[in-house]
Amino acid sequence: MKQEVTEQLSRIVGDGHVILDPDKLSAYFRDSMPRVPLVAVTPKDEAEVIDLVEVCAREDVPLFTLKDRQFPDPFPESGGVIIDFKRMNRIERVDKRNLTAHIQRGVTWEQLGKALEGQGLKTLMPAAATSPYVLDNMVSRVIMRSAARYPEVQVSNLRVVLADGRVHLTGSHALAEDGCDSKDDGGPNLSRWYIGAEDIYGIPVRGTAWVYPLPKAETLLFFGFDELAPALTAIRNIPRKEVCDQALVMNNRYLGRLAPDLPGSVPQWLLVLGCEGHPRHVEFHAGVCRNDASALGGRELPELGESMAPVFRGAWIRPDHSHGFYTFLSRVSEFHDLVASRVSGEGPAELYVAHGYGRAAWCEFDYLEPYPKDLDATLESVNDDLLEKGAYFDRPLGKVAERFYAGNVAYLEQIRRVKNMMDPKRILNPDQLVKGV
Image 1 (cartoon, rainbow, N blue to C red):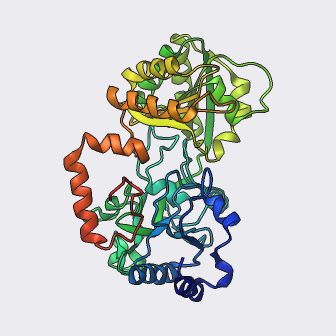
Image 2: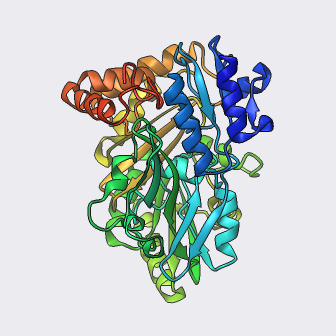
């Protein structure tokens, strides 16, 4: 990295917030640090992000935002400046009346949860978080465990730093900050422009997260199954009765990942149903869930529901080595068989999350240690098969993205057209969505 560039960065964020040490930079990468020119910066606010973008644009230096815990391989040969948002961790305002929390990019799930709990509020928790930061996950459309009942996108009113340093206000706060109190943008829903875009059009630095009152009562119901099929039938049918907010199926290996110290043995497959609300409603809804799950052969495990309650109050982090995609619930067993036939040994930890009142499911296959032989080759090969069979990867990156967009040429061309319009110098996250963009 040119010395004059690092000097400009230091003037913006301060010497103590510019990282040049290779050992410290290596923490941003899953494997070995790439042999490219790199520097990382930790800005404290939006104004510093604007100045960093302007420097990178002026000096033709690519700028990369850390959206996950680490960058996947390969990293672009150009190198560039990495922005780490960990210092931008201010909860600007919690609006209890309108059930919103206005937060900066570096606010963590734990931090927001504690602040909300003190006001009798909560936010939805992710089933497959890729970052400790709330907005990273919400802007990436990470699946929430309550997706059986609640909509996919849980954020609006984004403040976005564009490639020329201007700030785009995507929602009602474009009219007045005092009016930035809605769970939706109002008018054109421009936040959607940046959701799922991997920061290639602009860098969201603040957003309005949706929050909810803490329920007066809640319960977690666990049911054991010897076979996968009836458990999947449960998360297809029960959410359609609108009696639960969470409907998940996991194998016992996934449960062991969440609670490694859990004593005793558990069935091969576990159905989890979560009910919340007024105590009388919860009692009635739990009764419906019990009847339907039992009719399908489920055996209730009440002691498991009690011991797992704390685990369900936190964010679940998705491992680095996994497959994650959506499909219709009627096809989940087919994809389970596909993955199982290709992986030797104990097999992956598996999670299936009902989405949209049981219309579809998020499917997650996590590879845990000890890893199977030739893990990288196995991941690539299985992903190819999943794509060919119609699995919908909602966040395709790397080689998955290359294959995904190869079948969507017009879509990729539209992404390029918008990228060239909004970032003509290709400063923001080049090659991060797909190579060449």
